[in-house]
Amino acid sequence: MQEENKPHFETAAIRIQTGQTSFREHSVPLYLTSSFTFEDSEQARAMFADEIGGNIYTRFSNPNTTELIEKLCVLEGTEDGIATASGMAAMFTSMAGLLKAGDHVLASRSLFGSTHQILTQIFPRWGIAHSYADINQPAAWESLIRPETKMIFVETPSNPSLDLIDLEWLGRLAEKHNLILNVDNCFATPYLQQPAKYGAHIVTHSVTKFIDGQGRTIGGAILGRKDLIREIRFFARHTGPSMSPFNAWVLSKSLETLAVRMDRHCENALKLATFLESHPGVEKVIYPFLPSHPQYELARRQMRHGGPLVSFVIEGGQSRAASFIDRLQMVSRTSNLGDTRSIATHPASTTHSKLTDADRASVGIAPGLIRISVGLEYVDDIIGDVRQALGNR
Ligand SMILES: *Cc1c(COP(=O)(O)O)cnc(C)c1O
Figure 1 (cartoon, rainbow, N blue to C red):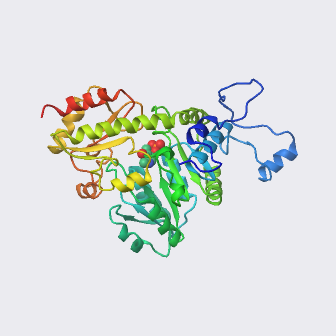
Figure 2: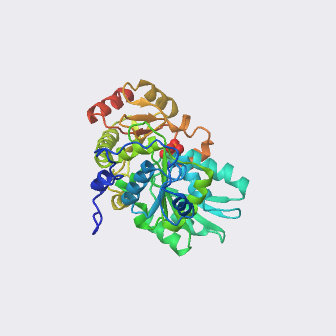
Figure 3: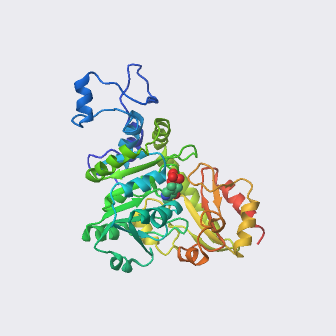
């Protein structure tokens, strides 16, 4: 992945740091300050007029959030960015900052629940329309583009059905129709996939997940082309979805270990997926780097590894899925993902319970579908717990 003059991923994730203070600290300190002082009135004037850079007020910027964003921009290959208080603040702000009444968004149907609520319940109040396209029917996408379409919004791999979108194809479609391509890259992280390389103009994140990686913080990021980020920054500066310096400090340190964590998450995930595929009590296993995945070739082309999430359909439907969840002894029962601890979720009764049966079926959520966010425990212990919870078959 190395290109000329670009720092290696791991090195950038560790060595991009805020400058040292007079204390000569090795680890960057936490800057808990609401505001910053000016040398004189002229400096204050010039900063407010955007003639010179520099921190004014932590709602606008702070050394800790700036460091996080500088790092993420290098890792994603984007020009500029904004740190936000949550992943949803990133999704909302990246759209609301660029769209106006009358605009239309084309989105993939399998979206994170709250992103779906923004498009279907909140944006219509302000006259912003949307259409959903199916990941598995790329030919239909072009026909859904209207004269007033402004943005394409997608997640790949999707949650929890782990369908992929061909980003190279989508980048070309966006370019042909002069649309802003916004990719939620939360499931892959920049270590596995860099959407900007394929023409994404905005890359959004819930950094709560694998970028934190230890289930401590809530945060988000909007990364992308300079002119678009400038517009979004205006919206963010005045509406205030800023990330706290404390979370930025934690998250910047988390990035230092992202590569090694993701390597192990994905190695464990592939081993678990392979085990599940051989288990008679499992109907179907979905994992992008299993040759049985319908988009295996695309996954190999687009992603460094198969990702940290494994989905599978348990034989016997909803009731057996519920007893699987109840029998787990180590793997956590929680709706989050992206932790050192392995997590099992039953989407049909939790994260996707508000959808109708037909809507669930259309995004590939069978009643017996279980999603595992594979953690960093010793892999045989993860497989052992899953095996005993599946019962004797
Ligand atoms: C979790 C998640 C979000 C929302 O992020 P929060 O940090 O919980 O606000 C958005 N998109 C995807 C794909 C997610 O997994």
